[in-house]
Length: 495
Image 1 (spheres, rainbow, N blue to C red):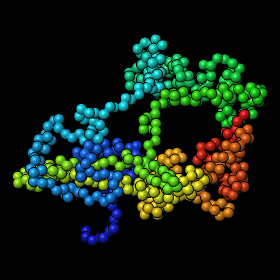
Image 2 (image 1 turned 90 degrees about the vertical axis):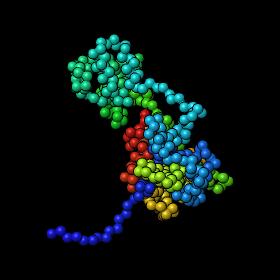
Image 3 (image 1 turned 90 degrees about the horizontal axis):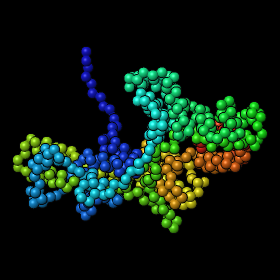
Image 4 (image 1 turned 45 degrees about the vertical axis):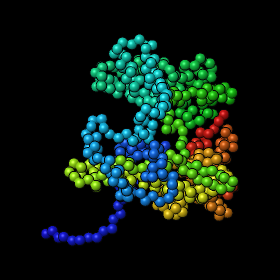
């Protein structure tokens, strides 16, 4: 038997506006412009104030004051309302070529006065460069396709990541070409003679040996080939004494061998890697200036664009309210307009809230780490975690984390990612609380000053840090060393 009952539950749900704000907080300045462009394209009720700087309804996000403007607060005269015809809007919606192009206004498109587009660089990719050399082999059409399949199987570093049998299967099923592993291997050997040297191989060992065989034969080169072919594992582990003994080489000759090998390229295709425009530079989100001892914080202007609600859409709403004839089609259109107006208002408020949260959080970070921002001395960085800034700003830790994620600040001493200023605390023997970043910096200095013929072990580094007052365990030293991308002592050894 079914029984009905009432239950009272307390649930916390995020509104669509809160979700939108959290997503916007995570976006760095370099991507915010693209996000605004997407919103402008999707919502014709949203416009930028770039072309109407004197309008009263522009939401200037550089203004920190309260903004009480809303869709329902708009006041229009009767003359203005009479000029707006909702039927004209409906006709425009029916036109094949109709639509709104506000995004083009913001980004320099539309009209006769279009901004000049920056020409993109034309670069040859690694695969294109190798394919261009196929003409030297004078292959028939069938072998040409097999060779193209082999080149297409190369990764961006120049290595062949597929087995010969897999390439044969690809040709059989994809291009209906029947071939044998021997025929594919023969073409691979020919492609290995292409530039750059060392391509179309499966392993690093093959890559380096292939490069050496393209160099004029000298004693160091021949010895280097023997090292890589017969003692590659010992070479990677830097067991130099063992290799030198087996090859019967003195210190001077062996040093020439090592110098020959380290000049080789482990990733021959890497020289053709194309760096995208977004990755070629860092766009800071904040600027911190030291004005005679007073720190001044400003937000990148790209974080505060001028956005507004379309005046035309507002006037359509007013015209509908004043209209005496209200048919079903007009009501549906007005519902669409209202939805777009609300969405535009939500987006403007979210951008405005984003700006306020960014400034509020960065101000707290700057105040907490004022010693560093005043001097640029990394030893002045205090231990700071997300919880510290959350308490200062009365924000949730997750909000602070979103602000710190992928954001950069430009100072007089360089540009830093915000995560750089966060570090855990470590207590010295005297009881003083220091940042783990300070310990890492000292550890880095100790390793840089070591004798590379006899590198310092983690145990020795632990003892040296203890002498300086930093009592940390050997495993902690190893963890910090790995975080600094520093290999173990044996791999730091040099001749």
